[in-house]
Each structure stands twice: as structure tokens, then as C-alpha cells.
Length: 112
Image (cartoon, rainbow, N blue to C red; front, side, top):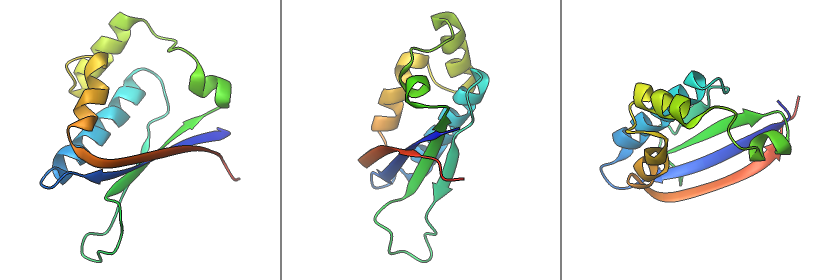
């Protein structure tokens, strides 16, 4: 992997557990369609102080890999999404957005 997609999230009040579940579902979806499983990091709630609740990192070979249209069919994607707990691939984004008050993302190169 030469490129990382980093997403930072702050959950809506009372939605932390639901956001965590959604992120785990999306990690499973990635795995089911043959992508690298995303990494999930959570702040230590007992320590406080962070302006975010969790962040995830997805890995890609390069910018072209990140931007390319999915290499799997709609049927395969929907089956993987349902297996991961979503209603289908079209529900992944809306499911995430119903649990967040803040979202930032960026692309960066991987340091080895």
C-alpha cells in the first residue's frame, strides 16, 4: 500500500456505539469484497481531551486504485453489504451519516 485514506469522526450525542458498529460493518464489507480491512482507532474515553471519537485508515496501492470504479459487480457488492449488516451498498453512506456530527478525511502517502 502506498496511499492511506484517513477518516476522523465525532459521533452525535448518544451515537458512539452505533458509529463504532457502522465502522466495524464497513470494515467487514471491505473484507467481503476483497479489499483491505480498514483499521479502526478509538480515543480512550477515560482520558478525554480528544476532539474526535474515532478514526479509520483504509489502504490503497496508489491514487488510481483509490479512484477506480469498484472491481466487483453490483450484485456482489449488495451481497457483501447485506452480509456486513447494511441494507445494500447504497445504504453504507447514509448509515454512517446518521451517527456523526463531524467528519474529516484526507489522503496521504504511507511511510515505511
